[in-house]
Image: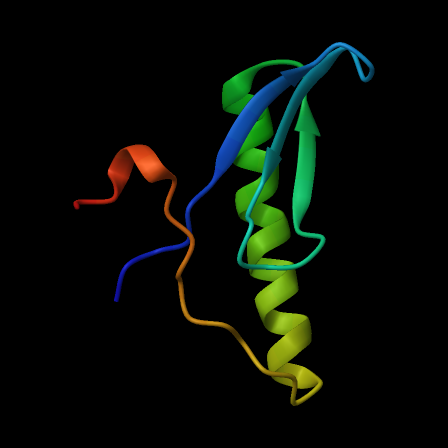
Length: 72
C-alpha cells in the first residue's frame, strides 16, 4: 500500500511551516522548520488513524497525488 501524500509549505501568516495530509481531513501540523512540521504531522497522522479506528470511522485509502506525479 502506498502511504499518504504530505504537503509542506511555508506560511507567512503563521510564521513557520505547515504540513498537511490531503486524504485525512483536518490532519495538519506546524513546525518552525520543514523537518519539524513533517515530524509533527506524522504524529498527527497516527493519532488521526487511531481515533478513526477506535471510533469505527472510515479510513480513506491513499489517493491524493499532485499533478507533477501523475503520468498521462
